[in-house]
Length: 145
Image 1 (tube, rainbow, N blue to C red):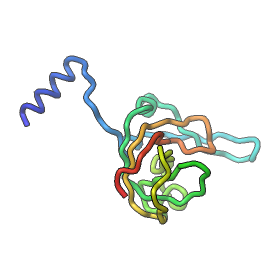
Image 2: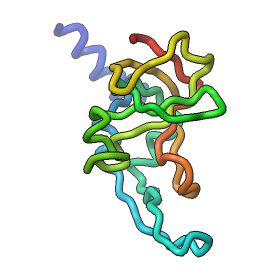
Image 3: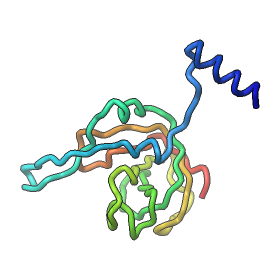
Image 4: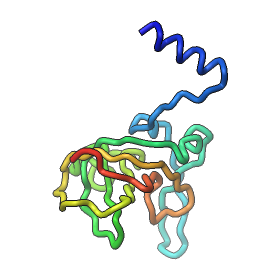
């Protein structure tokens, strides 16, 4: 244990980036704003591009969550931190609790709502397109289902 701590201290002092992996807690600092969309004469929510959130762009994320059934034409799935009944779409959870997972290859099976899976991919931040979720995992793979 002492050798590991020494290695980490040396790496940080020398400017070597120590690998860290993102998860749901990394997204908790997200802030959102309401924007008026003239076309629909209604307000939509967009992510505020804060420094702490934008620093996560391109980072490797490994997320465990619940499958949310959505109809997509591509290889995307939606993953939620909470089960369907309390997720962003049906419950009172915030946008930071759901992520658009764009799979490298189609899922090998069909999942049912609330099936718990683990995925890995690179985070993409969306601050402009209100028709897409704010957090997207690109080139993602399912690592446990």
